[in-house]
Image (cartoon, rainbow, N blue to C red; front, side, top):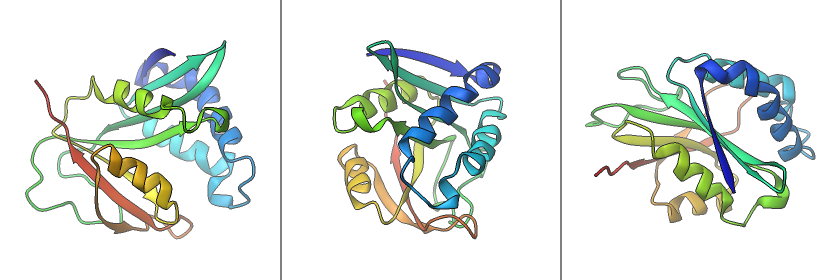
Length: 170
């Protein structure tokens, strides 16, 4: 699989790709929270951050999926959940990890995830998982994430499991 890296400067150029993959990944989901319109708000919000990073995977001439996120502002954390006591240093918020349906279960999500995090300068990475998606949560647990609690960041969002892991360097 070929990997491509993007930064805040590339956000406008990669926006359609991110939205198109989202549309395919959520094609059969009637929940308005997963609509293209709602998701475009999050793409624009996250990619507007100067430290935004994204990695996409490519195979057989087309996209496989992507992951993106950014470092929280000092002291920042997920809305609706308390930042864990004792958390020190920068924290990377993995906002999205999305793989097209035909590539799920092939190990490509982990490769994209790891490629994104290898260049992240943070002490910890955290993410949110829809709490009804137990298989996805178990996958992250197999990648050494721990569930810290739950959060519902907005009225129309699902209830999420808040997960995190330390990033070991060196």
